Image 1 (cartoon, helix red, strand yellow):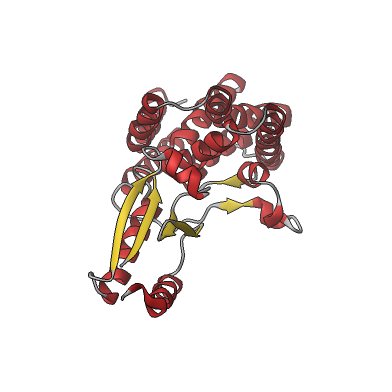
Image 2 (spheres, rainbow over the protein chains, first blue to last red):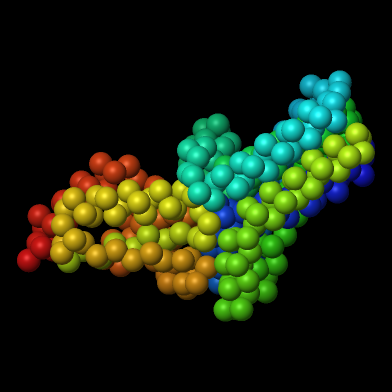
Amino acid sequence: MSTLLLVTAAGLGLLAFFEPCTIATHTLFAARSSHDVARQRRAALAQLVLSRSALLAGLFGAAAAIGLDGLSAPQAALMLGIIGAVYLVTRRVYLPVPHLEFFRLIPGGRRLPQALRLGLTLPACTLPLVAVVGVIAALSQRIDLALGAGLAFAGMFSLPTVWDSLHGLNAAHLAFLGKAAGASPYVTALLLWGGAFLIWQTGI
Amino acid sequence: MIKIEVFSSPGCGKCGQARTMLKAVAEELGADKVQWRDVNILEEMDYAVDLGVMVSPSIAIDGKLVFASLPSAGKLRAELEKRLQQGHAA
């Protein structure tokens, strides 16, 4: 369970960056901060990574503390199957799901630096991915593992932004990101359906 | 003629809705008065950064960022009508 939780968190965290509702905002942030002086850039990136890590570690930690006694293989396969289908549906139909902006819960949160607001926001298209990891964290009932999963998800979600900010963005890289954004809902659906198929076949 | 630019990313459902809404509002005002352009942020990153775009979708009017998030149809219509009254239609 521990390996499954951490690997899933890291994998889905990386996938979260490439979802269409997140990639442009994060790449804009990276492009903007890449023009900042090194000290400002490091501070902004630290704010992004640390705030996101705290948020996701808190959410997954809470899920583990609440706990989930069990989930049958058909239930788990069905859940992944439905979530995968949602990603395909959103290619054709707009689903009015808002971004979860946790910074609004803080007094004066709208005046926080963009790095903190970005870190304390869960974009709508990443919510199913966070939910999958949250369910596994709840099943593990291990708060320490769940905190690790939060760090893994947040780290991998932020990694491309940190990389782009430190190394800059050229035309070829931007073209790759454009293609990745277009393909990511299909990749996400395939991965989730693959997981559902594996669970259905093995019964684990 | 008012120039509207919608900044979005490929595959963004919310951006698609913004475009549809914008076009409907523009058509109501008259196609000869409003010109729009879809901007792929990932293809025109420098331009988006120059304008101050921070989130997707965002809307710029006449080369200036006016809506940093998705506006309602009413707000967009009001902004366009105000600009038309100020002489853009001349």
